Image (cartoon, rainbow, N blue to C red; front, top):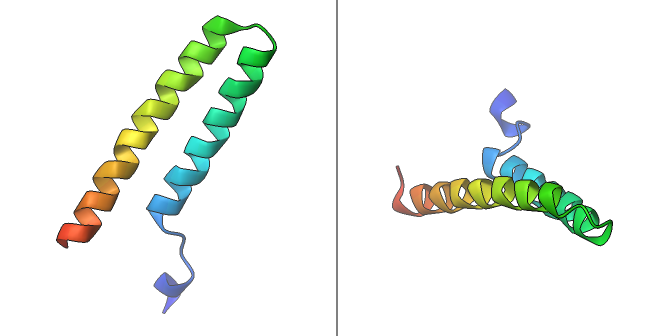
Length: 61
């Protein structure tokens, strides 16, 4: 019953990814290329996790 209201881990990952991409964009606009690179790398790791989750959901694991 309580599982009905719990958030999907996939949605949480997507929201975190979007936040990182936005922060990276702002860092780039402010001229902080080092921070931009770090945030972009973190966002890429999250994107890979999202793809893994999507593929495991589609295969039924």
